[in-house]
Image (cartoon, rainbow, N blue to C red):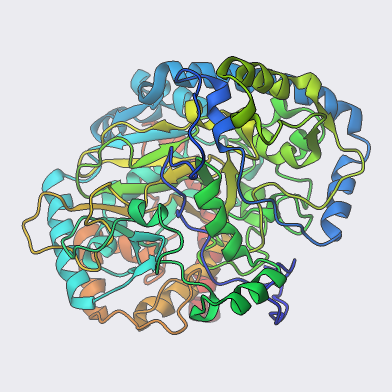
Length: 607
């Protein structure tokens, strides 16, 4: 990772300012619109209604001049090819939106964990699952953890939350808790079924040139947070707070409300945090893409060393394979701005494990890993020739608005900006990429952001790291933002544990060394801000014993607490050919030895 420059004193956006607030799952609830004069909207499902009612809102943050130079360098030599590819991309997005809207949650593939164990990648069930995951970028592995174990873990965590008295991660996302080492999190990361599911899912990527540089058969235990819904403190829900942005949930800087203070604030450039807050209350549906934002265009981020998205930026987005190049992703710097909670290791899948029933609507995502990715990457290079009139809601009939919207969305209305500006739509330093109705209209988020099927306790859902997604900050009840869960038993309690699928790499081994130290101190993982935050009161020896009891010595290895054994061949999910297993082990042994030397340097010295 590049060295972090010092923090400037200005509140304005600075291209190298290291921010400590996480670009987390803090979007406004799907479908939440800004307050505006009522209009007669077109019928539900109309593309005009997708965005014309949400065209107001926060403007993109102007970035420093170097971002115009970055855009110009990306364009150089590819202008004609990019302009031609844009029309093909818009046509593909329209087809995708119709397909996704028609199938909804039914397109999300799922597989029983028992089928993973029984058939692996050789079975017809697994082959269909692989095909659909690679098409849509998301999959559910059912019954990974037995239901009784998942529910018991939820009850243990409810007690732990009350004992720790923890706060939520963000005021605007009260369900996300600043906990990393609760019994449920420790046990679920250590669970052998979770690790097998991770290996199986990471095996859906095409290895290609990645052989020997990563090991999907050695998933690491990445400590992330937990989401807790339900409770009984009587505090307002997040949805209610979103309707009242002037309330105490987001007080003005320094707590002042007088006119002179407001005038002073207006003279200051907005910080990324101010922009994110304004965006969430004004841009209609908002989704996010993890693993950085500006980094996707920066030569020191994803675009260095040949570029992960090189084919997209060369005008051949159809050639982009989201399932190749994992080693290049592992080598990319995905956090140039020290963003709080920005994952610094390769996640081949983001994932959450349900400890309870999770109803549809709590998780939404856009299942288009190729076309949608190409669109939000190319959007900063294109602009409409004719924008929608600002007063269209007040001056046009529903039919006229529909016609104006179609004209606006037509490929002929969009041109490549060959003299680029500094705007990167939805991207600011230190935060995840935002995808919105206002800035990304061709994604048709109201049609293409699908709600996922019901998850049962023990189900594990994983999605590609480039997919836009949204996790609701509340469950719609008035008790969603309570600090402590209610006394048990409580049927309204809902929990999700973030457990990404991350392979063993040189970078992840270095991260494990730092995470191991944080674990022993009861502190958040290294990607999360530990300053001014109390440590979790935990018995480290008891936590290690829990890991070993649940997952054996392999669970301790995944945490970097015990060295990997390079003599014993790792267990492999899928395929039963001895020669294939031996070949796989040979590829992994190099990175295993490297990881051991990083985590246990005394082994190298003694050897």
